[in-house]
Length: 216
Image (tube, rainbow, N blue to C red; front, side, top):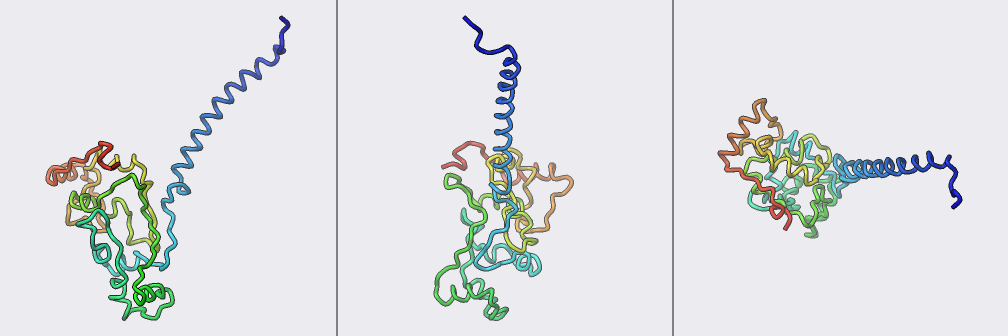
């Protein structure tokens, strides 16, 4: 049978095979890079809100406790959003006529809640309970970052499962005394591993890595 391809085609065939392998590897790497980018996770991207609420002012400069607005965070799976009345406790007197607060005044007058944009939006198949994490010594800033420095709120972490598992597998790296849970200026001490192990025992922290713990 006559030869169909010229011998000179052999290098081209080898190049095509190796090229396809490198192309597949490159495609996988690019997919991973995009998946972990801020464009996909929306981490470190400030969200537009109907009212430009600034944690930097309220939590940072004024020193408001997280629980003043997020009243259910210690007893409920959800931190909760403040009702308009919470805003108006101050803003009937302070910046009462500010144009940027018009949506707040309209909400107060009509009884319709403000449609805030969710920043930390977990998938529907994920379950997260704020209250149990606080009771076990996981601080607000561990997940939400230094909100007292945020003019507008943004997500500081990826929310990937591996991020959750890092803490569940080594809670001693992140746990802090319960009295410091709501402090934004609480930096991990140099001997965090030792203190963390002590707190893990004291608070009976036994985080599960079983799928059903978070996926229900």
